[in-house]
Length: 130
Image (cartoon, rainbow, N blue to C red):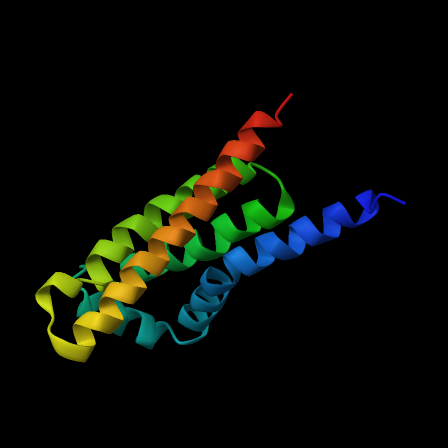
């Protein structure tokens, strides 16, 4: 036994874990749209309802592409780009001091890890295309 049959389920669980924050975030925003609008306003995005809807669609739609395997590379690139942009918007550690700076800096670099993961998913999916 070489363990090959487990590769599919293990890969899918790994992709699910990579998408977990976006699935959770999209669902929370969907079921608390007022909160989603408040988040967009907090970051200065206007019109806030439009941006909230776009973020929900992106988080859930791109995650669905990744998990379904259909246009996985596109979903991964979309979440990589979104995460990179959101990282600069939400984790501006260079404007903070003390403990806030420390926490924002950690989050900033953790998010770059997610970007790298999504780029890897996009690359491997693109390479496996016929």
